[in-house]
Amino acid sequence: MTKPGRTSALELIDIVLDQGTYRSWDVAPVEVAMSPEYAASMVAARAKSGLDEAVISGEGLLRGRRVAVTACEFSFLGGSIGVAAAERLVLAIEKATAQGLPLLASPVSGGTRMQEGTTAFLQMVKISAAIAAHKSAGLPYLVYLRSPTTGGVLASWGSLGHLTVAEPGALVGFLGPRVYEALYNTPFPEGVQTAENLYAHGLLDAVLPPSGLAGIADRVLNVLLAPRYRTEPPHPAEPACAEDDISAWDSIVRSRRRDRPGVRRLLRSAATDVVPLNGTGTGEVDPGILLALARFDGAPCIILGQDRLGQTSEAPMGPAALREARRGMHLAAELQLPLVTVIDTPGAALSKEAEEGGLAGEIARCLAELVTLDAPTVSILLGQGTGGGALALVPADRVIAARHSWLSPLPPEGASAIVHRDTAHAPQMAEEQGVRSADLFAAGIIDRVVPEMPDAADEPAEFCRRLGHVLADELYVLMTIPTAERTRQRHQRYRRLGLPS
Image (cartoon, rainbow, N blue to C red; front, side, top):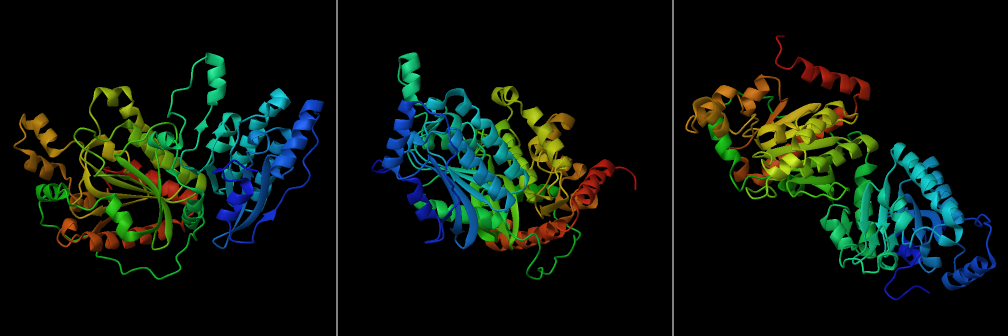
């Protein structure tokens, strides 16, 4: 039996899948050479768990959608992975790939099976290769970590998910605390290897009980497997761009209103199936950016937006935010899912930490990856667009701007300080630099201006819905263009920008 409070593999499957739909894929485990002691342990493990190995696999329906599942059973030798368990796991991954099924995996394991030594240790390689092939086929791979998940399991199939969730209080770490204490004669620091701490450090996307897993998996798959074509007629298009008699400085002042809607309000008012993702996946998180899966009028996308609420004078957007943005770019390329970037920043951090964290290099890498990304891309100028931190998310197939958004190498006050050695000329510099949406449209930098009537802060829900409809229109068109043609057009767009016609 499982430990009280610990969900068994079969119990988890029963919780997550639609009732009565699970069908096992398992056949008898491959035979492995065993010592008498190991053989006796296997007999005891089978009696204790009611299973023939530490991994089970199969398929079922999740909210009516066919999915493949694999799960570890801790009561079978601590969920450890040897040759037979690894072979079962790999066969299940390969079958899911061959049948075009999304895969939900739930490890719980002490790691490599010590009774099988180095040969078991090397199974990490073929497991990781099978998952890489599954993801290369554009198929979703979702991971739910149960307690404990350690060692080679965490360092292979436990850490490769498009989405990674853990159960509350789960022990998750590379080196098990008992091993650490035996090796170093001191306890491992408390609170480090917990799901909640790993979430705080951007290594997990969510911490949820088993009862919440079906809901988040359903929303994720609604986005990742959504049709790439429109099923309803488009909304009437707004005028391409009217002459605007609002001054650049007036737009800048409006864009700085604290009650102006940002990326969070856009998602709340105009998107469905929103699933926030968290952090870089490599140990960093920055509140200055929001990364999520979402749909706008049914159009699926990965959205990465500069969050006006997460950026403060004490904690401006730093290099980790751009590394998190690049995670979104990599996901878009891997899943061939449209990428939407939202620009809304008073500027990236100017600090010792930002310099030592490689801010300039992250801006450069964002620019290089965005302009060459295989996936369809749309950028939205939503509010302030200051400096390299803003530019890092601009290059796209199509660029949309809110009427009072703007884009500039520096805030106008900074440009004034350089040219006039004061800040009093900021309004003049804003006009001369052509930073407002009407000027950006005339210069070919943006493609569409979304009206504000007269100010997005005065009509936040209506404005966000209007912007969402425009975004959906652009996404649906882009998804019909062949990748090679789309990337060629994007390259030419930025290659010719500013040159004589």
